[in-house]
Length: 101
Image (cartoon, rainbow, N blue to C red; front, side):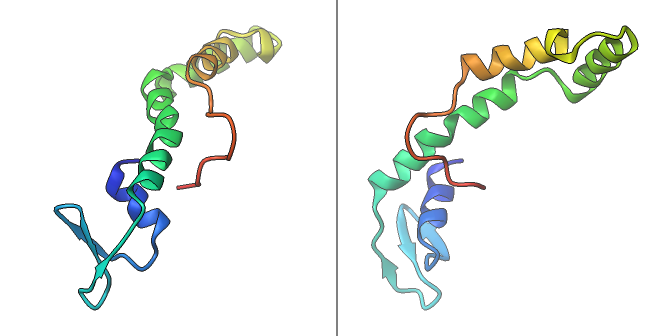
C-alpha cells in the first residue's frame, strides 16, 4: 500500500490526488490526515515484505506435494517451516489490525 492508496482508504470522499492535494467529486480541495495515512502505510508494510519473501506458489505446491506424498505431518514439513520463517521475520504490527485491502 502506498501513501495515495492509504489516503483513499481513509477518506472515501477523495476521488483524485494531484501533487499531494486531494479533491472530491466536485473538484473541491479535501483536507486529510497525512500522519494517519503514513501510519496505515507503515502498518501494512509487512505484507509487501512477506509477499516478496515467500517461496513462489509453484515451489510451495511442490513442497506440499512432496510432504503429503511422503506422509509427513504438514507442521513438520519444509513448506510449513518456510512459511513460518517468513511470518516470523516479518510479523504483523502490534495493536490495531491493519485495514483490509
